[in-house]
Image (cartoon, rainbow over all chains, first blue to last red; front, side, top):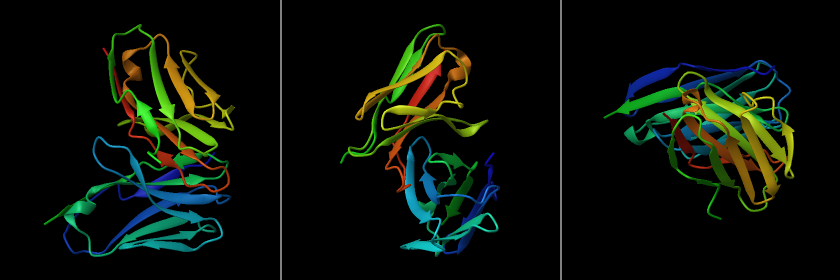
Length: 110
Length: 113
């Protein structure tokens, strides 16, 4: 059974810092991995999708990497801003369904 | 496209009542997922459909829960009878099989009193 873990559970940093959020999964036979952002009381917004054949994806200040063999992904946020404050969730797809981690709650203060 | 559309956005009902949540997936998507989110358990997959057919309903907590997808553009999640422990945010998501990227609706916040 696929299990997804995210570390840390919460993170509070000053504006401008570069951040790394971690995601690990137990079954490496995945189709893809997706990072989402969730603002309080809102739905999930897709940030990046990494296919199993890819090693990383970039979008603006966000970079996500994938190491299938070790069951890990990282989300790197460069030059963090207060608007980045949200919960970040990773999800793995290994049987056409997404299994989510518990998320990292990020707060960036001015 | 307007994205995944869920209704209602909020629902407050009394224990024992029937609740029906609705979802319209993104046009052209052929996978549809129902998730439940609570503080205690995070996001849990309840059921998913491929091409309108239920593939895995192992996440449906009890027989009180049922889901249907009568056509490619509509799905319902029904709880009958509802209980206070069903209070949660219910999300619907859709994707294209094989392409992987899932898109979520804004969710339905259900409160059972």
